[in-house]
Length: 471
Image (cartoon, rainbow, N blue to C red; front, side, top):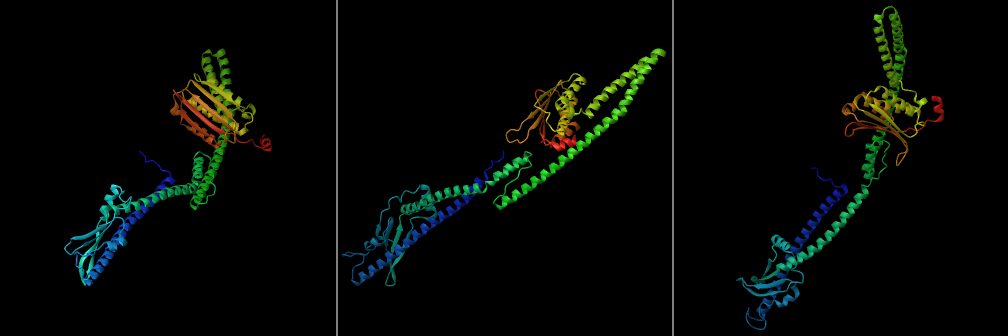
């Protein structure tokens, strides 16, 4: 099963979105690391400040002879002195003796909303950064350490603060990402709008409209594509015009050869058959009087000559059709169908005409007659049909069509469809139709038979002076 095809604009927008999301994820990770680094630095700074204050307290106590950790009005350590300056939500400060005992500890409550982080984020943050670790700084006095000051930030508070900053950043990033995708898609849609013209041009070219051309584009890449497309369409149009001109010339030469052959058959072979028939009739009369035994052979020769003469007339009619210019296309086609009905045996031929064909150009009408003749001949020889119908319709311009066109249809109910689709007759008919700028199609009809369809545009009428010259 083929993979679904994505729109180019959507695909590029998704790639830009993925790249932007990766950048945003990196920015979020940096914010998390920076938040943890800032929290550790703040804890270190608080521990250092508390250690300095405690060292000062020890100096003052020693100077005024205040007993250590004993009674009196100013016991050591006094963390309240420094707490007002350094305390923040979730922060804890303490003094730890050399033995590891915590003598005094002060903690502030968590800020509202700091404990609202999701469990997944909390677990991930704890795994990555180990939230809740403390910072310790020795309390130095007289060149020796007398315990240490400890500062730590509550784990939930630190995670809550990180989540608050990260969620705010994520919200901004999500809004930015959506806006970026929309802007990228709109920009790509505007930049790729000329591809619609390219697609329409390719469809017209594939449909046989070689006059299709692409307009100039602003983008250099699309402009290069348009230039190549226009050159290709121009070359195809020139090549097709040259081929059609050559085909028309070959068809004209073929028609001239047919006329020459018909003239030779009529003048030579026809006269010989007429002479044979006359001689057979004269010999029969003589045999009837002098030698009755020779009369049947003479009559047989006469019948054979008559049959050959009839076959010759049919061949001459196919080689040299009636003068379509004088009789008209409709009358010529009706005569063609009548001729086939007279010699086709069990096959019945019929014709249906729709439109006025008298105004068609002379050469075009003659070509139509040849096409219809080839189509009926093809059906008669290969279809083995009982009914063959020829339909010819003249359609006026409609829709985007600028010219009238001829629709020719030949339908039969025979069984020789496979044979009827091949052969020199069909090839010649296709070449003649394509030379006229038309199209030909064949399809099997149900329950049996073959349907031939041709659509041929009507050429413009020649100027009056050319018509008089041709006449």
